[in-house]
Length: 145
Image (cartoon, rainbow, N blue to C red; front, side, top):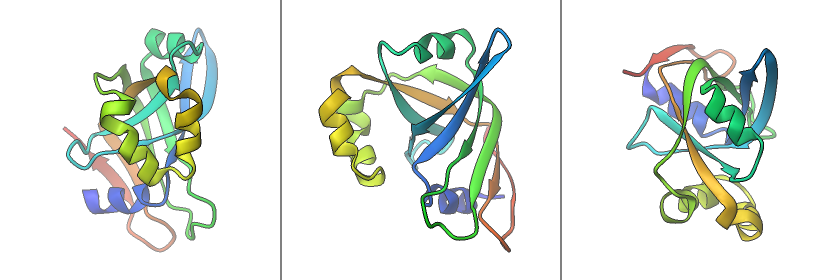
């Protein structure tokens, strides 16, 4: 699998189901994501800085995810990965990622207006991502170094 399939699937979604586990308790959250082609092995998402989820992220940064296709996307394209390393990012929403969110996540301006200053950025560092561009298309694992 090459980056073209990854980009094809990424174009069909702006959210993932992010799976975490701490002390034997699994949890899944739907979070909006953005991706920068200049750093292809990283997905970004944000969370409210006083959310209980931050303690979970800090305690066990080994996570899994699967993309959630946008409504009406034909062929059910998706990507999924396990053992993804989650870490707090040095990037900020206001200075670095807001334009990407506004471009790729419908109605994000409303979210930003309500809670923007309270958001902190996280990175998902990708290693092996299973990419399925949809029915009848070649699928496989994309390896990042």
